[in-house]
Image 1 (cartoon, rainbow, N blue to C red):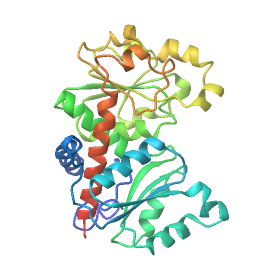
Image 2: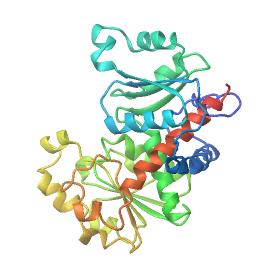
Image 3: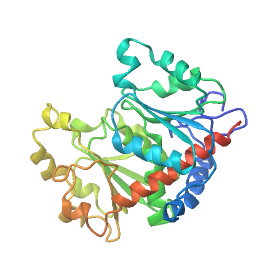
Image 4: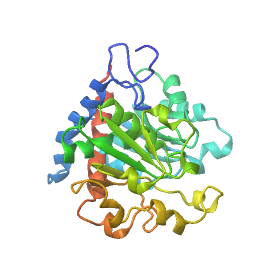
Length: 318
């Protein structure tokens, strides 16, 4: 475990940087810990005192209202003090380095950094740099990883499908640029899902994607045949304007999830999307708002999963 910066010498989770390389016991522990946190949202007072007195800094070097908000809600429900920093408009623009920024915040008695950064590996760099009592959570780095999104997705699958060992899961869309897809694939493989499929045009698949342990399909109807779970990925606007795709309309025709295409999946298949959705590009509104969609429960469960990660980290070595 010494080569995994996420795990401390006691075998506990010290940082959450990537799902890749995590032992299955730790992944299951996070999911199990999240379970009782789901009901906290249903209480009149939506708080538990687990992180009272702890200072959690949201360091978002690139914008993401949804992820930042769910981390903030999760931390506040654990009774932590939350400090949100819009780094792009502060010290970084004045030439301060990433680690200078972290050092200054650590001097303010930070207990945890939630880091989102456009550069792959930024969270790893910070985790290697901080003192042992400070924990780092990767909230998305470049194209590399988005571990809490991958975890909340498998938590959602477990809620609706109970077991992982008999499932076919299809991930559809821009796999090449998606840190979410990488985290989902690692989580599904660790938890023993026997068949993970990726469905995308060749221009949106990374070279050698099969090495991640997935079955590749370029035809959506074939790829959706008899699957239990359909995860749609967001198509970023810049991809639509670039050379990778002819047009948004063309993309929707072949890779947008419609009721007709969903009919190839199992009748009780669930539909997921990490959000925010481009309706009419990667998913039709009738499907997004339909009976098989679990997109809104994903958001709810995301808070519980992030609460679980934070509470486990603060328990490690503290």
